[in-house]
Length: 488
Image (cartoon, rainbow, N blue to C red):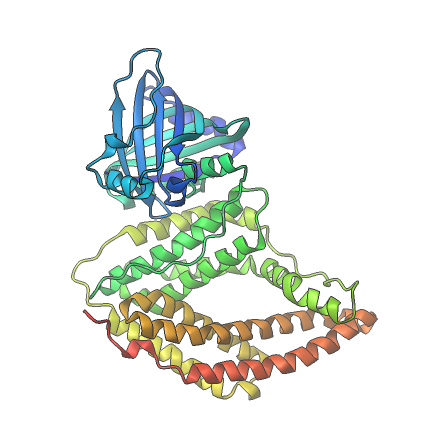
């Protein structure tokens, strides 16, 4: 079967209220103690699979969970075990043979032996809730992940769809989010447990992935698949930033890339579905803007500042930047979580009688490419504001090309994207130089080091302009892959 589940972290100040809301007369309370298994080289974790044996009150259950979609769906197969009193069963992969999840387990595991790696100790309060369009099991879990002497506290509320449709599940969850300030977390217990076993808390930044776009896919279905692919990147990084005390600049960078990709596809192709809402773009743009200063600071500290110090000002520091929003706070706001849920519901939907996506995608790609070409031919004479607009268009062209590439021959798409990379990179360097110049302009009136920095930045800016012109000229010579057709 396929499990559809939304999981939320519960703020400490609202845990008592959530407990009261879940623990109604019909609720059940049960102690859960689970042991998770993997090979010595963690092949299941690397394949995003999980195999556990769990004691649920008095019964034992073995559960296999396959690789999911990175958000809220994954394969699951569960077997109730007959266990003699006083014994603790070990995991048996054969119990899942003949199922899609079990077949995947055999392929991943091969001849490797299973060993216990981590566990959970949880007090679960659960109840069945009926709402318009769905039947949902609520499960409020308090306890910990365990691995040797390491512990990772757990306090989360799960909404598992037992009947009905996913959109109704989202609508129900959104009401609880509004009431209790819950924050969405797409990281599974198994994912975090595997980290705990390795002695780490933070996952790797989640990078972009291509959508699955079958031959002659309809416009609305293609749009939903692209939105879903973007959400995997956005929610994977947002979950880390929202729920961990410290992350890396790369997590924020990848979150911003995911948001840009999501905004691009909604802006360029939102017309492919009448169920899109223009307010989504406004909300995403406002959220994106709140992370801008933090990303600018990170970029300058990692690249330009070391180069300036090497050039002759070893004690140089960045001038104060505009106050930037606390990324964690922004991602934990109710409005942000509700936005994620709205987009998840859209991505999970379907529409009938939809015309093929490719002709309309081709039109948008060709239009963007023409706009970039016009700006590229005049780049040297443009002012910095128009160069910045061109940079944004280049990014949109690249992101839409990456998302639409599965509709076209792989070789042609890859060749085009190979030329896009240098254009975006050089324009990014130019933008960083412009940001740095604006920062050092005021201090340079009184500070000799800042004055030196301005001179160095002016020289680098002239060099960057020439590099941008070369990269853009190369991009103009690229053949648009959308002019070809994917072979059958």
